Image (tube, rainbow, N blue to C red; front, side, top):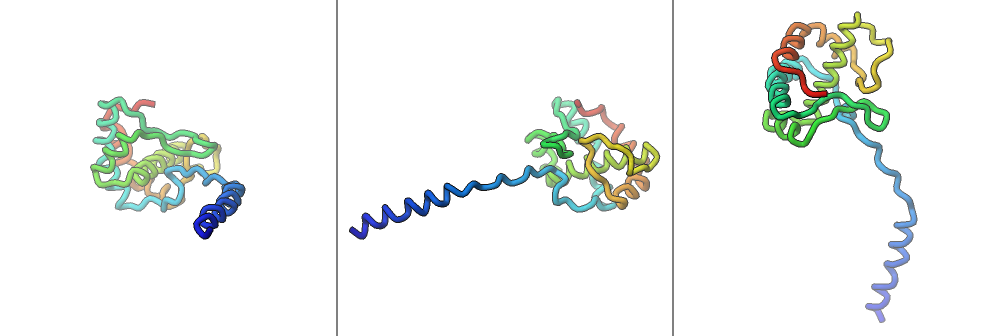
Length: 152
């Protein structure tokens, strides 16, 4: 009898738990919960960017900003994530830095106007990140042009 109660009692509890609909977790992007880019981080990033771009081009990989669920995000493959990991970077951080610095570069090229209309796949940029882009503008342009462009 006790064994029968063991099997019967949990059923209503399990049904009640199933009856409560769970809210789906909001989709995260590479930019969510990421701190602003630092000076040292940008320098480290710019050192490997030409190698990443060359690897991506050689392997016909795509890596670029996208709009996902109405939010700015970054498209990259598991292979690209693995390549980045092998260089000592967390892929989310690497592609967050890539997207934010690309956005900062666009803002600088357009006259530093952060209030203008931006493409929807462009992440927001902090004033500090904009200052970094200005300070390292030459290096950023050189690092971005040292290899063929990534497919888009």
